Image 1 (cartoon, rainbow, N blue to C red):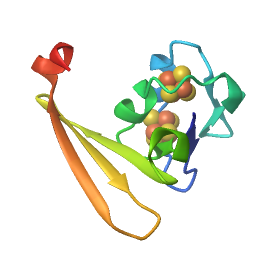
Image 2 (cartoon, protein in one colour):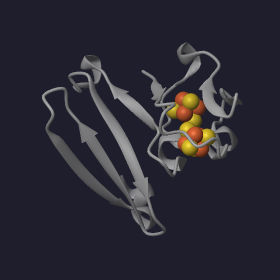
Image 3 (cartoon, protein in one colour):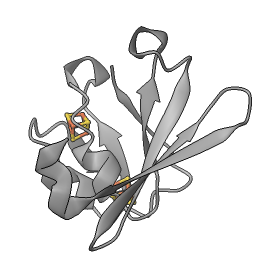
Length: 103
Ligand code: SF4
Ligand code: SF4
């Protein structure tokens, strides 16, 4: 269970480093990096925070995810969760932030 950082998309804004509850993320040479992916417990805070969709959550087979990638796009009202599957197909789920505690 972990995230991955796509360094070619990262602009080094540092926002992800401020939200990780385990303080696992840091900037190295102007790009986000994770100290040790084995320590990540997949809370997805960094995935939601990144304005460039440079961080994805890996949807492994043990999560029923078949190796897909979960990205998030955030605005004031909602989060768009975008899944990209190994066969190239995509799905999107939109959650309202005000109702987040009801899930
Ligand atoms: S998913 Fe959560 S624990 Fe893992 S690196 Fe991102 S913010 Fe930290
Ligand atoms: S929030 Fe995204 S763009 Fe900003 S440093 Fe982190 S990975 Fe890079």
